[in-house]
Image 1 (cartoon, helix red, strand yellow):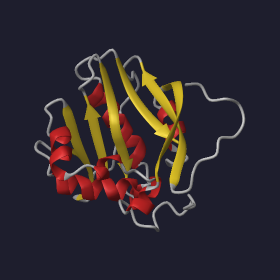
Image 2 (cartoon, rainbow, N blue to C red):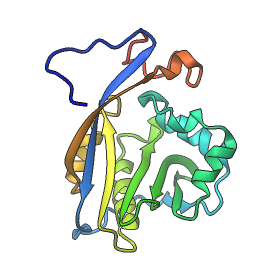
Image 3 (cartoon, helix red, strand yellow):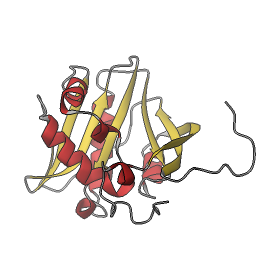
Image 4 (cartoon, rainbow, N blue to C red):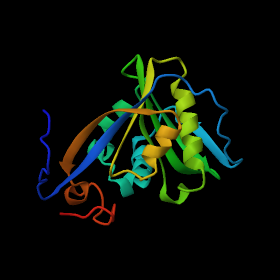
Length: 197
């Protein structure tokens, strides 16, 4: 359904964002982004759903990530333990500071389903490192294309970072959902830049 021009009111208790879908049609040909010696990206062979949920919350709370938090632990485990889904933790000094989830369930496309850093890891170059590693992992083995999406609730540097890595926007959508701060999934203090209405 196409939206008409102008403004569309969003009801109380809802959040809305503009989602931008991006694609990469060929692997990166430049040099790898070098991380600091204390940075490591570690594959989680059999990720614990409670661990995943804690890290997901730490990474996504300021951007109102809620989709994985709506799932019970059993439903979450079915996704993150699927052999076609790969979960990684970015560790800085041995502490989890970033999350990467690569979804290979829709071949021939591969999606960077979730990628992000905890607030204290933003602004030190870890995002470029994590994204570069994510893209290189996603291209092994060779998919048709690698996908990612972001929205207007995300960090303002997310979209430019994806574009600088070689992703190209190809579609937009409006997402409307219940405000996770009002449903109790996230605390009322999350995403202070987005008013609760």
